[in-house]
Image (cartoon, rainbow, N blue to C red; front, side, top):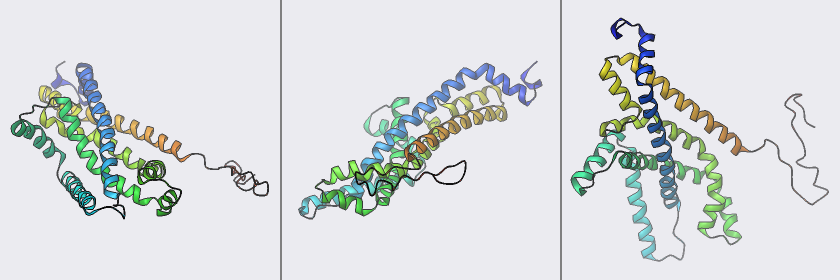
Length: 266
Protein backbone atom coordinates (compact mmCIF):
# COMPACT_ATOMS: atom_id res chain seq x y z
CA UNK A 1 0.00 0.00 0.00
CA UNK A 2 1.40 3.37 -1.03
CA UNK A 3 1.12 6.42 1.19
CA UNK A 4 -1.42 7.93 -1.22
CA UNK A 5 -3.73 4.96 -0.61
CA UNK A 6 -3.56 5.28 3.17
CA UNK A 7 -6.15 7.10 5.26
CA UNK A 8 -5.38 9.86 7.76
CA UNK A 9 -4.59 7.65 10.75
CA UNK A 10 -2.55 5.20 8.69
CA UNK A 11 -0.40 8.08 7.47
CA UNK A 12 0.14 9.25 11.05
CA UNK A 13 1.23 5.76 12.08
CA UNK A 14 3.49 5.56 9.04
CA UNK A 15 5.14 8.86 9.97
CA UNK A 16 5.73 7.66 13.54
CA UNK A 17 7.17 4.37 12.35
CA UNK A 18 9.49 5.90 9.79
CA UNK A 19 10.42 9.21 11.46
CA UNK A 20 9.69 8.52 15.13
CA UNK A 21 13.36 8.64 16.12
CA UNK A 22 13.87 11.94 14.27
CA UNK A 23 10.84 13.43 16.01
CA UNK A 24 12.14 12.31 19.40
CA UNK A 25 15.55 13.84 18.67
CA UNK A 26 13.87 17.08 17.60
CA UNK A 27 11.74 17.08 20.76
CA UNK A 28 14.84 16.47 22.89
CA UNK A 29 16.62 19.39 21.23
CA UNK A 30 13.58 21.58 21.80
CA UNK A 31 13.45 20.68 25.50
CA UNK A 32 17.17 21.21 26.06
CA UNK A 33 17.05 24.64 24.44
CA UNK A 34 13.86 25.63 26.30
CA UNK A 35 15.08 24.52 29.75
CA UNK A 36 18.61 25.90 29.47
CA UNK A 37 17.47 29.20 27.95
CA UNK A 38 14.72 29.65 30.53
CA UNK A 39 17.33 29.22 33.28
CA UNK A 40 19.79 31.61 31.61
CA UNK A 41 16.97 34.04 30.89
CA UNK A 42 16.01 33.99 34.58
CA UNK A 43 19.62 34.78 35.53
CA UNK A 44 19.65 37.69 33.09
CA UNK A 45 16.21 38.82 34.22
CA UNK A 46 17.12 38.76 37.91
CA UNK A 47 20.30 40.75 37.25
CA UNK A 48 18.49 43.35 35.14
CA UNK A 49 15.51 43.49 37.49
CA UNK A 50 17.72 44.05 40.53
CA UNK A 51 19.56 46.90 38.83
CA UNK A 52 16.35 48.50 37.60
CA UNK A 53 14.82 48.49 41.09
CA UNK A 54 17.96 49.64 42.90
CA UNK A 55 18.19 53.20 44.12
CA UNK A 56 21.41 55.15 44.75
CA UNK A 57 22.44 55.58 48.36
CA UNK A 58 21.69 58.98 49.79
CA UNK A 59 25.41 59.56 50.30
CA UNK A 60 26.37 58.48 46.76
CA UNK A 61 28.28 60.96 44.67
CA UNK A 62 27.26 62.44 41.35
CA UNK A 63 29.42 59.95 39.44
CA UNK A 64 27.76 56.89 41.02
CA UNK A 65 24.29 58.35 40.50
CA UNK A 66 25.05 59.16 36.87
CA UNK A 67 26.57 55.72 36.28
CA UNK A 68 23.53 53.96 37.74
CA UNK A 69 21.17 56.09 35.66
CA UNK A 70 23.15 55.36 32.49
CA UNK A 71 23.14 51.62 33.15
CA UNK A 72 19.39 51.74 33.79
CA UNK A 73 18.80 53.51 30.48
CA UNK A 74 20.85 50.90 28.60
CA UNK A 75 18.99 48.03 30.27
CA UNK A 76 15.63 49.68 29.62
CA UNK A 77 16.55 49.97 25.93
CA UNK A 78 17.53 46.29 25.89
CA UNK A 79 14.24 45.24 27.46
CA UNK A 80 12.11 47.39 25.16
CA UNK A 81 13.91 46.30 21.98
CA UNK A 82 13.72 42.58 22.67
CA UNK A 83 10.15 42.73 23.93
CA UNK A 84 9.08 44.88 20.99
CA UNK A 85 10.50 42.83 18.10
CA UNK A 86 9.72 39.26 16.95
CA UNK A 87 12.17 36.58 18.07
CA UNK A 88 12.36 35.27 14.50
CA UNK A 89 13.87 38.57 13.36
CA UNK A 90 16.10 38.65 16.44
CA UNK A 91 17.38 35.19 15.50
CA UNK A 92 18.22 36.30 11.95
CA UNK A 93 19.73 39.58 13.18
CA UNK A 94 21.98 37.96 15.78
CA UNK A 95 22.96 34.88 13.76
CA UNK A 96 23.78 36.64 10.49
CA UNK A 97 24.84 39.91 12.12
CA UNK A 98 27.49 38.22 14.27
CA UNK A 99 28.93 36.66 11.12
CA UNK A 100 28.90 39.73 8.88
CA UNK A 101 29.82 42.41 11.42
CA UNK A 102 32.13 40.61 13.84
CA UNK A 103 33.17 37.60 11.75
CA UNK A 104 31.85 35.19 14.40
CA UNK A 105 30.20 32.08 12.99
CA UNK A 106 27.90 30.72 15.64
CA UNK A 107 27.09 27.04 15.82
CA UNK A 108 23.57 25.66 16.18
CA UNK A 109 23.64 25.29 19.96
CA UNK A 110 25.46 28.53 20.76
CA UNK A 111 23.19 30.56 18.47
CA UNK A 112 20.05 28.98 19.93
CA UNK A 113 21.16 29.54 23.52
CA UNK A 114 22.11 33.19 22.93
CA UNK A 115 18.96 34.11 20.99
CA UNK A 116 16.38 32.50 23.27
CA UNK A 117 18.19 33.41 26.51
CA UNK A 118 18.50 37.09 25.63
CA UNK A 119 14.87 37.21 24.53
CA UNK A 120 13.67 35.44 27.69
CA UNK A 121 15.85 37.69 29.84
CA UNK A 122 14.06 40.77 28.53
CA UNK A 123 10.68 39.41 29.59
CA UNK A 124 11.99 38.09 32.89
CA UNK A 125 13.49 41.48 33.72
CA UNK A 126 10.04 43.06 33.82
CA UNK A 127 8.66 40.06 35.70
CA UNK A 128 11.39 40.31 38.34
CA UNK A 129 10.94 44.06 38.62
CA UNK A 130 7.23 43.59 39.23
CA UNK A 131 7.89 40.77 41.69
CA UNK A 132 10.29 42.89 43.71
CA UNK A 133 7.89 45.82 43.78
CA UNK A 134 5.10 43.49 44.92
CA UNK A 135 6.94 42.79 48.18
CA UNK A 136 5.85 45.18 50.91
CA UNK A 137 8.20 48.08 51.51
CA UNK A 138 8.14 47.28 55.21
CA UNK A 139 10.13 44.12 54.51
CA UNK A 140 13.06 46.12 53.15
CA UNK A 141 12.75 48.77 55.85
CA UNK A 142 12.79 46.12 58.57
CA UNK A 143 15.87 44.45 57.05
CA UNK A 144 17.74 47.74 56.88
CA UNK A 145 16.67 48.56 60.43
CA UNK A 146 18.56 45.53 61.75
CA UNK A 147 21.68 46.49 59.82
CA UNK A 148 21.39 44.55 56.56
CA UNK A 149 22.99 46.01 53.45
CA UNK A 150 21.05 46.50 50.22
CA UNK A 151 22.56 43.30 48.81
CA UNK A 152 21.69 41.28 51.92
CA UNK A 153 18.16 42.71 51.95
CA UNK A 154 17.56 41.73 48.36
CA UNK A 155 19.18 38.30 48.62
CA UNK A 156 17.78 37.17 51.96
CA UNK A 157 14.50 39.05 52.35
CA UNK A 158 13.05 40.43 49.12
CA UNK A 159 14.04 37.87 46.46
CA UNK A 160 12.76 34.76 48.30
CA UNK A 161 9.33 36.40 48.53
CA UNK A 162 9.49 37.77 44.99
CA UNK A 163 10.48 34.33 43.65
CA UNK A 164 7.26 32.82 44.93
CA UNK A 165 5.25 35.61 43.31
CA UNK A 166 6.91 35.24 39.93
CA UNK A 167 7.15 31.43 39.87
CA UNK A 168 4.00 31.11 37.68
CA UNK A 169 5.52 33.47 35.14
CA UNK A 170 8.79 31.52 35.10
CA UNK A 171 6.80 28.41 34.29
CA UNK A 172 4.86 30.33 31.67
CA UNK A 173 8.12 31.42 30.03
CA UNK A 174 9.27 27.80 29.91
CA UNK A 175 6.06 26.78 28.15
CA UNK A 176 6.43 29.69 25.72
CA UNK A 177 10.05 28.77 24.99
CA UNK A 178 9.10 25.17 24.21
CA UNK A 179 6.80 26.46 21.49
CA UNK A 180 8.86 29.45 20.34
CA UNK A 181 11.99 27.42 19.66
CA UNK A 182 10.30 26.73 16.31
CA UNK A 183 11.50 30.15 15.11
CA UNK A 184 15.07 28.86 15.32
CA UNK A 185 14.39 26.78 12.21
CA UNK A 186 15.07 29.99 10.28
CA UNK A 187 18.77 29.63 11.12
CA UNK A 188 18.85 25.86 10.61
CA UNK A 189 18.46 24.66 14.19
CA UNK A 190 17.27 21.05 13.99
CA UNK A 191 14.51 21.11 16.61
CA UNK A 192 10.99 19.68 16.53
CA UNK A 193 9.49 22.16 14.07
CA UNK A 194 12.45 21.79 11.71
CA UNK A 195 11.89 18.03 11.79
CA UNK A 196 8.21 18.55 10.97
CA UNK A 197 9.11 20.66 7.94
CA UNK A 198 11.54 18.01 6.74
CA UNK A 199 8.96 15.21 7.08
CA UNK A 200 6.13 17.13 5.47
CA UNK A 201 8.40 18.20 2.62
CA UNK A 202 9.59 14.66 1.98
CA UNK A 203 6.19 12.96 2.08
CA UNK A 204 3.85 15.85 1.21
CA UNK A 205 1.75 14.91 4.23
CA UNK A 206 1.47 18.33 5.83
CA UNK A 207 -1.75 17.73 7.75
CA UNK A 208 -0.70 14.36 9.16
CA UNK A 209 2.82 15.53 10.05
CA UNK A 210 1.43 18.67 11.67
CA UNK A 211 -1.02 16.59 13.71
CA UNK A 212 1.75 14.33 15.02
CA UNK A 213 3.98 17.30 15.83
CA UNK A 214 1.17 19.15 17.61
CA UNK A 215 0.52 16.11 19.79
CA UNK A 216 4.20 15.96 20.74
CA UNK A 217 4.25 19.69 21.56
CA UNK A 218 1.14 19.26 23.70
CA UNK A 219 2.66 16.34 25.61
CA UNK A 220 5.79 18.38 26.32
CA UNK A 221 3.97 21.51 27.45
CA UNK A 222 1.31 19.67 29.46
CA UNK A 223 3.90 17.59 31.30
CA UNK A 224 5.99 20.65 32.14
CA UNK A 225 2.95 22.62 33.30
CA UNK A 226 1.92 19.79 35.67
CA UNK A 227 5.45 19.57 37.11
CA UNK A 228 5.62 23.35 37.58
CA UNK A 229 2.19 23.39 39.22
CA UNK A 230 3.43 20.74 41.66
CA UNK A 231 6.52 22.84 42.46
CA UNK A 232 4.33 25.90 43.06
CA UNK A 233 2.17 23.88 45.46
CA UNK A 234 5.25 22.77 47.39
CA UNK A 235 6.50 26.35 47.59
CA UNK A 236 3.20 27.39 49.18
CA UNK A 237 3.92 25.20 52.19
CA UNK A 238 1.27 23.71 54.47
CA UNK A 239 -2.09 25.44 54.76
CA UNK A 240 -1.82 25.63 58.56
CA UNK A 241 1.09 26.57 60.77
CA UNK A 242 1.87 26.23 64.47
CA UNK A 243 2.89 29.33 66.37
CA UNK A 244 6.43 28.78 67.65
CA UNK A 245 6.58 30.58 70.98
CA UNK A 246 7.83 30.04 74.49
CA UNK A 247 4.98 32.06 76.00
CA UNK A 248 2.63 29.54 77.64
CA UNK A 249 -0.22 32.06 77.56
CA UNK A 250 0.04 32.40 73.79
CA UNK A 251 0.93 28.79 73.08
CA UNK A 252 -2.62 27.81 72.18
CA UNK A 253 -2.82 30.43 69.42
CA UNK A 254 -2.15 29.06 65.98
CA UNK A 255 -3.03 25.50 67.00
CA UNK A 256 -6.40 25.40 65.22
CA UNK A 257 -6.64 22.94 62.36
CA UNK A 258 -9.17 22.80 59.56
CA UNK A 259 -10.57 19.35 58.92
CA UNK A 260 -11.28 18.96 55.19
CA UNK A 261 -13.42 15.87 55.73
CA UNK A 262 -15.83 17.29 58.30
CA UNK A 263 -15.56 20.94 57.33
CA UNK A 264 -14.87 21.96 60.95
CA UNK A 265 -11.89 22.80 63.11
CA UNK A 266 -10.21 20.85 65.89
